[in-house]
Length: 267
Image 1 (spheres, rainbow, N blue to C red):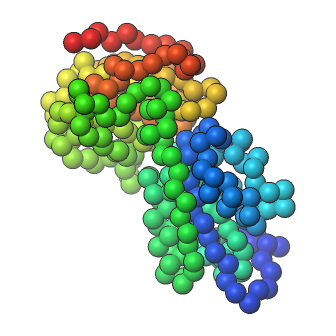
Image 2 (cartoon, one colour):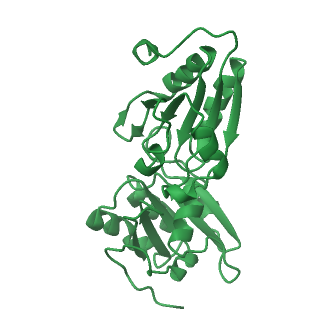
Image 3 (cartoon, rainbow, N blue to C red):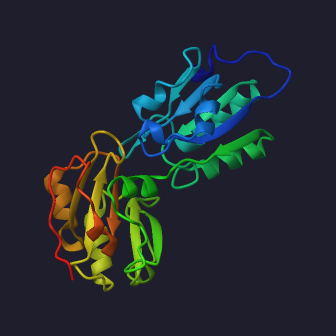
């Protein structure tokens, strides 16, 4: 922590402030105007691995960039240390942008960072972003809700505190909804098995969207029963999103860079 702060802080009479900014799902043109304005006024940008290079190129040349990105096997900084870093930077009078992929409050741990800043008596602002579920589904032509088959959508974590998620499986297999799993690649086999064990049909359409909204987006369609096999065979790049539900039948291949596709029968 001291090494990160060395040379950054300067004496000021007032504390700085932190902006929790959603960078969207990847496509630079999906960054909001407010997010762009705040980013271009930043003195320090603390960013994660899901922020695209095109968006990082918008950071002012004089701003300090601090990478705190996490992968399943490696954390540059654990979350408590990230919280402490944001507090220290703001207390030193810096104008800080905490730049996150998607939306800060949808599986982005922005709530924890906001809480730490508020407890320290610091100003914290939030700029929402297009979350991965909305952006990736739209970029693939998959409507998350559709009057014919899905009256609700569930955003679900595919990764629990200790690995495999402990979820309310009976509620997840209810008809008329779409399931969107974040961080679900690692445990896709157990996710699909649990859903089928609680009554969801193995023939339920599913999709894996890798690098959604970006130029190298890939979409793999399959069924719930073949989801794990598809992930193992195709090795989709991270970040990837899993969508399970009848709405996957509306997947539109035009404009999507797709490696493999299973044609789903219309029932």
